[in-house]
Length: 172
Image (cartoon, rainbow, N blue to C red; front, top):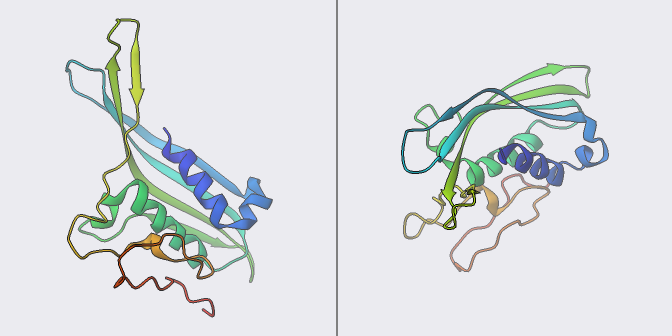
């Protein structure tokens, strides 16, 4: 399951405190299952709830939620199209006036392609990327990735009409 490691790397990159104190980030899988059908391959899909614990966090919750949404847009974009408009849930325990423990729960899936080798010596396993829905419609260029994190631009576009304003203003 590669998404747990991907999210760990993503959050560590955007929350410097987690790089300094890696023990404050805990990621684990809960309630996992495998989906598959009898076919010519052994391909399958993981389905699980990823739990993300950020402990003793002394910042604004927005600085966690915005990178989470950007990661979801990249790694599990269908969560942003859910009819209930709720891509994940969270719980927070306020430890004092400055710090809190935050536990995020995200229901994820991962497709695993298992293909037999031509020489019969075993199998090759691939984890394909999620489909990119950002460019699904002409003229749609916006994405969560186009700006956040101290107003630093993360992704640029060749579209001269695109508005790449930050999601969180620097003085917020």
